[in-house]
Length: 389
Image (cartoon, rainbow, N blue to C red; front, side, top):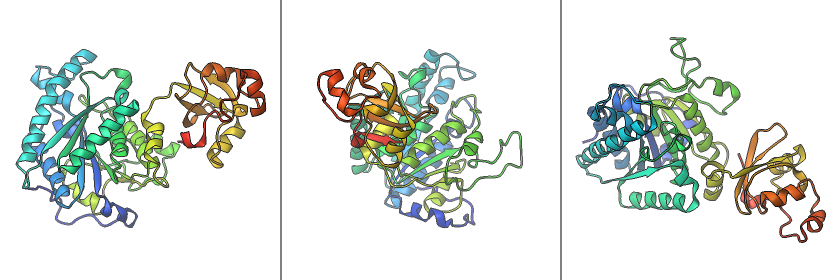
């Protein structure tokens, strides 16, 4: 029982997307508006069609994880709300009720597929993934589920998440899951055809941008705000997600998901939605975690020469290049690096605490021992523990 058919005449093949046909591990994210149809309940028929499309990819020998929104929307109706509540405790209560509904629907739908598949639920928060051992635990769980032919179904743990650790309608969550799972492709199903060259509400003739080779300031200005009573994400969070996966060597396709069968066209490399190709080589797993998942404890501001040495010559950071320290943080903590313009450009694990760096910033390595009484490390951040964003 698979429902993966789309239009009789498939979209044309896109040569630049040929590599997508080889994708063996895929993360699919589906948004609240698709799952609820804009109502205060889950569209059960849509869930069945989505599950059919995902099962169809599994039948091709691909492994697919599903990042799902919709828990709050699903719980609103169950708890008697007529619109999405504003307060955090009420939204968390809706999420608690909605998670039960969502997982039951997914489990039942996958059980009816041929072959039937088990599902496994992962509830994650940004805080949890920022801790290295929890991040690795989540990664190992994904691997174990894939190994057993089970479908990982991931959502933010809305029942305990607070505003400052939310992912934003799961767009960023799907990007972090794709990096943790070593995915070959991230597909974000949304209620618009893809990235458009103008806001559709302002310009009904807005056209789809088929490929975004680079995320420029102009591309970022095209991202609009959230447009849903039930969802919290907008195009902005999708662009941020694209930045993460592109830098991790993973392509992303942002595509209209009213017909989930579009997933088949995506993996066939056809010209649907907006394609964000990966940027260069894939970062090593540990550096992906440093770059996008872990949370910096402080910041170091460096001069132009240090920035050039780090970004262009892949050197380590020395005390002489540091002009300002933002703390407090300890030795071994993750810190962000900013250049003269104040914009973060890298992250790394510091060998020195903030108090020590206040004393040695701007000094040559030969002067550090005199100031501290010893020279524990020549580098403030070794190049092996640094990642350029």
